[in-house]
Image 1 (cartoon, one colour):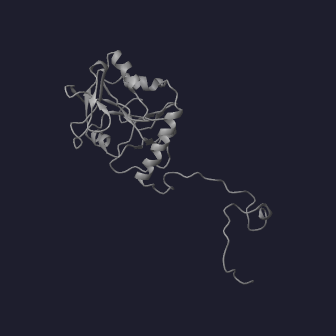
Image 2 (tube, helix red, strand yellow):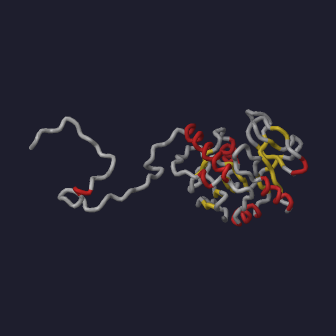
Image 3 (tube, helix red, strand yellow):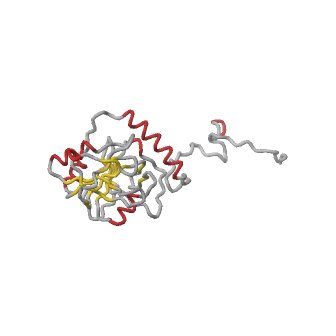
Length: 229
């Protein structure tokens, strides 16, 4: 046997054609198996949010001017006595036109409300003609005089999502804490289709979504908990 080489060169690609079929080498090239969340290293959530915000901004620039919401979403919200939405910030997908339509049809609609930055999120009734006021954060909220509501269906802003219902938010944990207090609410995430990822590893406190609605499709996440989607 010859001398052991001083170093080994590792090829980045599969063995070249001249060794395929030679004794000791397989005759077929290996099947490429795509990575899954279980086999991928967990990305730091701060880094993930930076990437997701960039993706969301690019998606919003390419989005159509008029969104056509899927029938499944209309069916879901029509079953709710009170529907919670949100006032979109920056490149978030906006449900405002949908909410205005619901109000016009006589549905009760509410938006997130904060008394101060350190307070827990609640929801207050919203009627378009009553206007909005500045929240302690960077979004608009119903005026202080609006009635407090407990929605049974929530449309939730989503920074990143997967088809199992895992969601990445802005990092404040406001929705997770609210949903832990109201677990029976129907949870529907809203996002541009480009915001889907396969590398989200849920934390112990994360509350999964029942469904996700993008500008292309309705995604049933398979977590029904008594809800008919």
